[in-house]
Image (cartoon, rainbow, N blue to C red; front, side, top):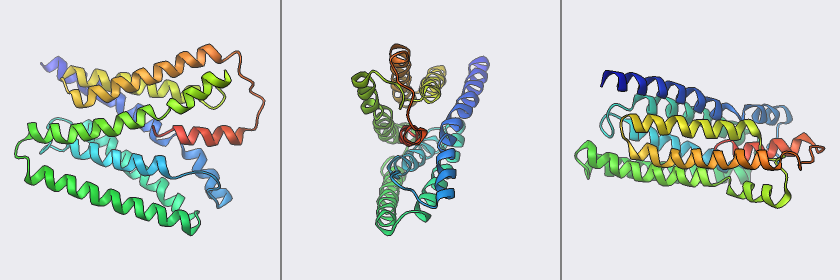
Length: 236
């Protein structure tokens, strides 16, 4: 039991490090946005989705919902504030039309989270039922985020090119899914296991596609387009 708890803590810390790397991967893009003082064609959608996803996982890891999940809380709490920073930069350098959309989405997400929190506290009265309720919602969110690269994978197969599917990001997604799946298995937690197993599978498929189409890829193109594609994938 002590060995399992220790191993779970170590795996969780490794998972925190990998997840932190994924959360910070769009930083170069936002540095470029600040320098240009314009978001150009970039969309805030991935960051708006991720901030709610992080908030839900923080709620899931709270002691009154799912005890002994502090490492889930730490990384998603950090991720929440990182995503808020991205959204803030996006808001500052966006035209009013995009700013209005950001404010509207954040308002909807705040209302949604508040409703879920109230239901959790006043409808469900033990950690088992609360874990199940919040866990199902988190699974749905994570599956949606992990399956979003399917459009990119379809493009890779169609064009026989992996130019817009960065290897390091695919590898990080695979490792992140594997580590958190192991974490969930050590003290069986299906709500963490299911989405991260799918994430590991998604990352593995991306790596297989990368190995398959690397040689047929024409790498002679502007880096700007590649950066744009990377930021759309970075938070899935």
